[in-house]
Image: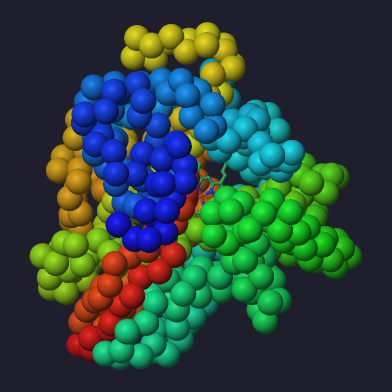
Length: 421
Ligand code: HEM
């Protein structure tokens, strides 16, 4: 156990790190605390709940009482019944970030959700993605061509963060020289005060205000120009969004930054981790690059970059015989549904030519299904095409370091070495 994780375990009375998921009383299992996610100890907890208590009530936790939905089919039911399982007031397990939550369409119900989503959607329409493909490939090639061979470096910083940050700058038509600000704001928006990046809530808030000020300047510039195809222009000119109050604009901007940032970043890293854990799959890929599009879906399932989405029951209801009351928090653990053997055969294995690989839960389902899913897949496909054209192996040479979060399922560092063809 690393020093940081050991310390977390000692400090928090809520930590599950080091506990035996099979011998502890099942009612005490709490998936919301970040410790087991950072320590990579979550899988046996998910397995036990799926088998013994698939709709599980956690009465006491640092974030209050909540339900955990563990099975693929039940998650589908919750995600596709938005009238009973509302996305308001928030899709995070914590009710508010202390005194403040930002509104955005991922945390809205119909009809406002649909109106705002419609405005942002064209940026990821197939025709726009096609236009972006060449630019993404150029950027991927430049990043890969500058990496050292046979020398250790951090894949997260040098590839995953770099590529997704450049993509985000493109989507917002954001000044390229300032693009690292986007990563910083995204990381601060999801940071847990005291958990590493943000020392306090005040520091977090300072970063978010800086983000608002910057994007307000961009908005003021775009509103004077003809409507364009970047996200800021679309929000500034869109009928449903142009009168948005500042906090709603900021909430939507942060949604798009976080949506397009952490998730894709952690899939890029997750793919390297998966191929190293399953070397026979790496061999299969080397023998036939046509597996790449299917492998991309398998990476996104295996990694599940967002572990859950939360809903709030709008009325009393029943799920798998459990009585859920109006107002209860209901957490859909996509990460568990994606490992559910009842729906997905050999679910713990990474299989690049898995049939129906796209049938995973990582993008959610229903009215909130990820808006950027095709963009994310395209980025990953291009990346792997170009990686395979250049390198025999991206070898993991040290333990991956993971994010301290039960929501963002990802990596802070991955030491690798590249070996040429
Ligand atoms: C592998 C990468 C990605 C994963 C795993 C992912 C995952 C998700 C999930 C789980 C949801 C919520 C689904 C639900 O509640 O049913 C979502 C929503 C969303 N995602 Fe993604 N996402 C990814 C990439 C992206 C990208 C690249 C963008 C940028 C354009 C993006 C933008 C959004 C937006 C705007 C929403 C809100 C949709 C709505 O509420 O209608 N995502 N994503």
